[in-house]
Length: 158
Image (cartoon, helix red, strand yellow):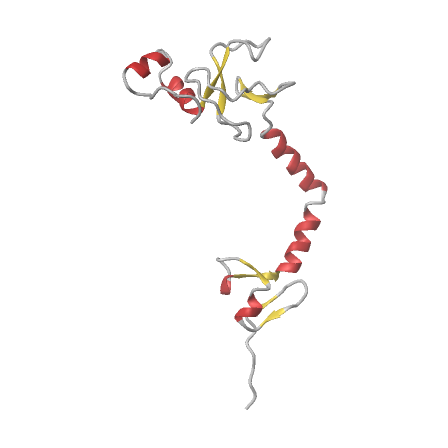
């Protein structure tokens, strides 16, 4: 009687075959695939990814992401605009909370009045919770919300 080995996975690029569960460890994980592994080995997968990230298409993608999340950009009249320097100081002007510099986007630049000539005119830097509360009910002042017990007073850093 001849024994036939069942091939669990075979790399579509290099032809590497996996016969046991230990051999499957050489293939990239993918829970949606058969045996929880992709049809490409880790070595070929990594080689493909390295080649991709050196292409002009990947560089363009990196630049778009970098520009989108640049701290010098603010949202102004439905558009993202770039400023010469970062307008954020990471301190909320309403409640006084301070955020460390490594925590990005904990504060928002809020425009009371939009001035097309100067995007930073009539702005306040608010933490996300104060900005959300102010947008929901702009007629009520922040101090009124504190008096009614809706917001705790900030005691330095949190």
